[in-house]
Image (cartoon, rainbow, N blue to C red; front, side):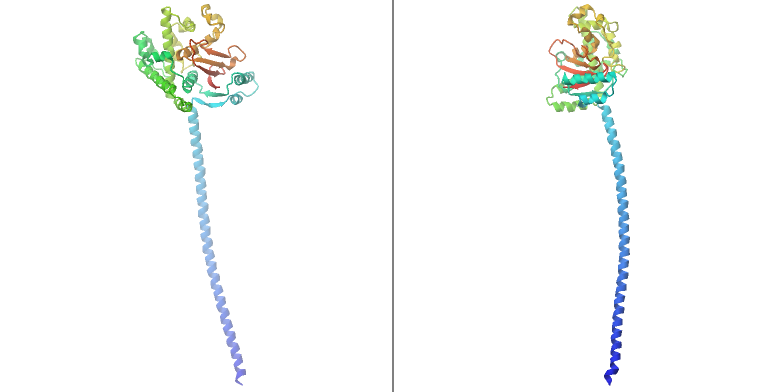
Length: 382
């Protein structure tokens, strides 16, 4: 009889234990859910904060990158412009490519220039060209650059004389006090100190020429030339030294002519002109303008053969081509180099390729110039 009464109580206790276990499980699930939810919110906030910080960092570095890139591009362009502006003799470029770039179109002059360049390429085997800065020193620059880059030796007459002392020699030995009116290109400089200024110019030329002529490494000479011909101040001093050497040779020829000594015919032609009848007029009317208002070849107009006195025709039918650029003759004679000029505007004529002097007194080294109009010069590279 006791057993039946106890059965319901057991079931109630069992039900109570089951209910209590379910409540505990539910509580744990609820707690776990809250913990996970809170952890997710914290993690999401941390991730969002990290992503925001990363985005801001990336945006900052992107802006910094763009700013630095812009600044670098500006400085590179500035330095390139500055370097190009200062570089007076540019690097070698393919001759025909240069022609195609400079002479486009079908104008008569463009067609003439293209044919002239093709003639240089196929007949004279000129492969490249160096563009030379266009100013009133370009002819002197083209000549001196080749002398230095080829390492040509010092002229014999310069070895025999101390050319640094030539300015004073003209004054004290030959009484040329008029040299005080010498003008240094665009610098209108005259006065008693002109001798000291000329001496420094000639001394620089002698130093540089001696250094280049003693250098056997072609690449080293080229590197030094690029540095030297990027310094406008040094360049001007060198060109003024060349002008003075030309003046000295003209003065020497004039003194020899007065004593009835034999001089090259072109000097006689020079002195036969009213504007250069003596060294002073040559300097005042022609030489002083070089580097200032005109270039080396621009102070003499073209001569016709009838203007050359008959006694000067001893060099043959090409005397007129020598008279065309008598200044280049004086330069070549002074530096003891044979200057061959390719005059592209004279294509298909006998004056397309002319030499100054045409018949040098000795076996002088030859350098070449290229001109499209007779005023600006470039350097052909064989």
